[in-house]
Structure formats: C-alpha cells, structure tokens
Image 1 (cartoon, rainbow, N blue to C red):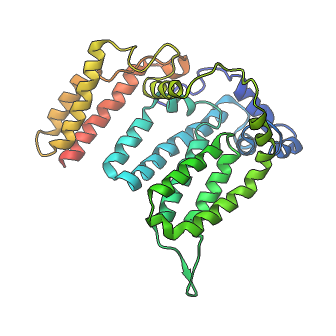
Image 2 (cartoon, rainbow, N blue to C red):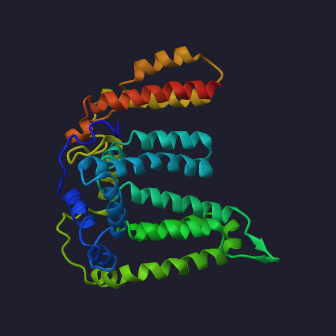
Image 3 (cartoon, one colour):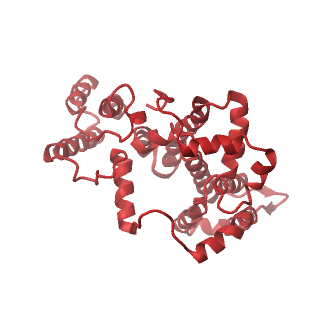
Length: 328
C-alpha cells in the first residue's frame, strides 16, 4: 500500500524545497539549525546524505519516508506490547498499517514519518527506563541508564526534525505520572534527562519563544480544540477529506456493517475455542467490505486499485490471521 505508485504524482512545493535545501551550500544547511522559522534542520541533513547516495529524484526522496513508515508500524507494535500486551500490539500495528493518513505520509518526501518514529522510540525508552532497575557500578546507583540516553537522543533529534516535537514532553511527563509511585525511584534520572534536553533545545527556544509570545496571523483558518480532535479522528479513520466528518458521510447500512465487523472481531477474541479457520475465512469474506473506507482525496493514495479494495484486502488477511491466532 505504501510502495505502489510511489512516483505516481510529481513533487509538490514542500518536497521541492526539501531537495533545494538539502542540496544547498553546506554553510546554509548548518545555519538552518538556528535559523528563525526553519522547520526540520535534522531532516535536511539526513536528506543531504540520503540524496547523495540515491540521487536527487522523487523516488529516492519518498523512499526514505516509506522506510520510516514501515519501521513506525513495527515500533508501534513493540510499544503497545510493552504497555498493553501482545493482542493490543497486533491491533495497534494493524490499524497503523492500514491508516489512510499514515499511508499518505509514508509516500511523501517530508519528515512526517521520521518524527513519530523518533517519538515512539523515545516513549518506549521512557517506559523501559521507569520500569527497570537502575545500573549499579561500584555500589553506586547511576541516575541515568541506557534507556534514558536513548530517550534523550531520540527526543533531541525529534526537536530538530519537526518544530512541534517539544509538545511530546507533556506526554512524557504524563506517562511518568501514570507510573507513579513506581517511577518515583527514577526521579533523579528523569530530572537529569530533562536537564540534558534543555541544552539542545536552547537554539530553538531563542526564536520560538518570541514568536509564541508575539503571536500573529498563521495564514490558516481557526479551528477550536474539539474541532481539531474531530478532524484528526475522521482523517485517521477514513482518509483525507474536508467534507468527510466522522460518521455523517456514512449511510445507515455502512454504519451497521461497521458495527457487524467490530462485533465479529470481538467474537473472535471471546470465542477462541469454537469454529475453524475455514469458517472464519468465509465469515471474513462476507464482512470484507463492511468497514467503511471513503476514497482518498488524492490519486497518489488511489493507487492502481481503489482504496476500498486495498483496505478490505488488508482487513481480510488480518481477520483470517486473527481467527487462527485466537483459536490456536
């Protein structure tokens, strides 16, 4: 779903800018780390190296995003397994694999798959850091462990990959609080990690703080927080579409089919001892087109086959596998 027709559309403005910045003079690439308003200097450095290996073309540019997107599916599986167990991990990875938004960004030459990959890695390292015992060297407990080092490195790189990455610190703090009082024994490590994150963030803070305090026109229409949440939920569920709110785009029959599909998956987990893989396969065929999947708004996501056919094909394979796994 990600590799098919990767070069089906020409480069758009932002992708052309990525190539232009990456192949620019070395001095400009280095100064981009402190340039006011510049987004993603670390990604530009990576693209300079990557395009130097594969050439400056649309396939090479987008293939890097594709690789990060595939790695993100695996990273989500590992994180979900750590937090919620194997079953939830399979569901999370499956949903990420067929997500219309994730498929879209996996075939776009931007940093929108690298950034979440770094942040998921940082979150996994954080969970490991506050769940494991600290290192002891010469009867001295180190407040910082390799997990904290990975957390610091991944978060720092995310800072310089996308301008909004510092918001991840709020998520990290929330996770630390959720793990309380177990995380209490790792408070020193958390404070050291936070201090280490402050230093690399200073060059960004120099221009971000005045911009945030000054305010100004963004050039985009205003969206309230609840509207943002609705748009995100709709786009992640059904693909891009300005006129596709969450459920108003579905007919009652499509909603009923979606509910039937959800019920079928629940029965697979609840009745693992009954039925056979063949029966499950036949049931999945009848439900293969039940999950609503509105067409994507771009031909790049349309691919040679329709989006409904692709997503339903993934659902069919996943459903059959789930039935066998649960009954095994």
